Image (cartoon, rainbow, N blue to C red; front, side, top):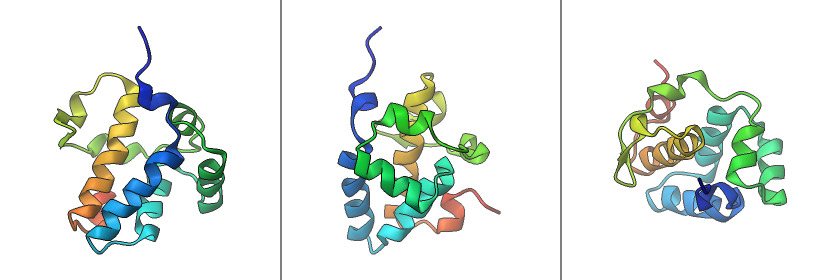
Length: 117
């Protein structure tokens, strides 16, 4: 079976769209970075290095130092699909990130987005 084209896409291509979406709703680039770091375990320097290297999504998630164990609590619809029903593990990781950015742009509190009590 052929891999989905998003897997080969550079995170650096999508990242500005994440930031733009958040900033249009009054949120900050720093909040986008925080969400990405807490989802993946990357430091800010590591995140910036991956963006500069134009790492693709497949490698970005495969090399993530510590995927957040609470990410399985992310529920809801993104791109017309329920995140919790996505069977492909890599696509689920990509959609978790999309969902978190979407929640940020919708004004949800960062603590709730990151599933903290």
